[in-house]
Length: 278
Length: 340
Ligand SMILES: Nc1ncnc2c1ncn2[C@@H]1O[C@H](COP(=O)(O)OP(=O)(O)OP(=O)(O)O)[C@@H](O)[C@H]1O
Ligand SMILES: [Mg+2]
Image (cartoon, rainbow over all chains, first blue to last red):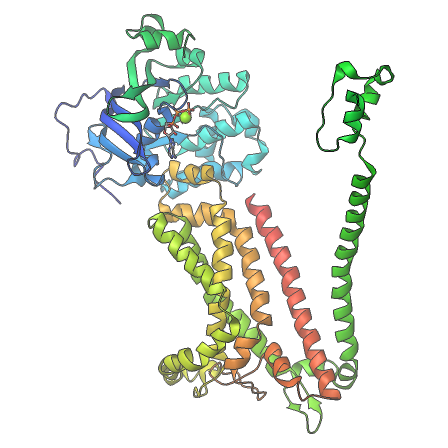
């Protein structure tokens, strides 16, 4: 067990704000062993207990940044990160940090629902079990499904395969599965992109509920969704770099959702949120 | 030539010049009937269908013919020895007494034990080659070498087994006999060719099959599933053994069964290294026989009831592989039901 994440042994960064959950300090991420820079020089402070939305045109690196927050990028060969990502002041990319523990504390819901080929019950119990959950499993399954607003639809078919659910239900199952391991942060990459408006609304309600216990970061292409669910919004954009050929993603503007959508400081943000992009 | 005619006779290029269509084609139905094919194309289609049917049924016919002729050839032996053929191990062309137990034991022992060794090795290699433990360049090179292993002719492997592998392994087999000699399986002194070296050469032969198939099935496990596993804080071993392997299990099981069939039927290399003895011994260190090696060894000088006995043995071998195949399909179906 890696203990370097314990608060006591955590090397504190110099001026760590206790309100900050995740802090990106000059983060640049590249693919293909440094050949293709995906995002450049991102600075960002994601506060605790809030919903932060990432918006921006396709290919600007939203998913890339999101995956960097729980070291999911480690699984992609040739993907490298420069700069620092701090979680409660602890550098997530420190040598002593165990990526497995990072992902347990910072869970992720993916764009495409990806339940395990197991029963609905097992889908939730699996993660809890491997993370050493000792309590009443039935109770955990029920409470996780309730939090993900899936209990009523799934309570009579817990033994059935996770694939027997509809796409929207599967996505909520994936959310329930993530909640069950009790992370501190939940990252969601376009969780509603394959869903109908009703499922989308259900998931948004879920998010409002989850926000009380978790910090949430969500990538979305849906402006209304960003305004409905998020407290803060980061707008990513693609730019040309002086000494690099090809487009590179960057964080154009970051602030209160209210301000980003109503009175952004950047012209590009204004164009994007009002649909006058490109 | 107007647009209409051009459409009729141009078989590859379909272009509908609506303006030039004559008035008789005013209904939708006529429009859909427009693409009439020239008679040459029709004939080609029909003759191809006929050819395919003939060839496909030929496969079944050949299979049935082989089975029937082997069965017919073994009739005398079946009548003389009955099921006792399977449980006795005399093989005496002088007195015309035949029993295939030694060969059946050899076939089962070599194929099952070689599988026992090759499956963990092959699946382990496949895991190593698909989960990024090492850089992809190194993985490609190792993968290529595994595939090259499959390309070595079995007679070459047999030769290598006799002159290189067996002498090299002799000390090891000797010490096995010295320490575990009280077990019937190691009770004889190794004296060269035998069942144990045959098992090892079979491992070399089926390892690439298992590895290649397991690698394919593992790499077909969707990335989303891997991400799901890692995304909830599963360790790498947890993800491999509890999510990725189960998801690939039906493909892997198929590969294992395929190689079991291969191991049972493998002839050349086994004949060269197994010792070809019909004296039954439980010991794996003693020379033995498999059905395949026995057939290869004896068909040349056999006549009369010996041929019939060989046919009987061949029939048993076919039945064994058939059983393995049916079992394989059952296993694959069971496993894939559970995991997909
Ligand atoms: N696995 C990968 N390997 C190589 N390059 C990648 C990989 N994933 C993303 N990229 C590159 O990184 C850049 C940013 O991709 P990313 O997926 O982060 O964009 P995005 O903002 O999430 O886009 P979208 O809104 O379409 O999901 C793209 O140029 C893409 O080509
Ligand atoms: Mg994306």
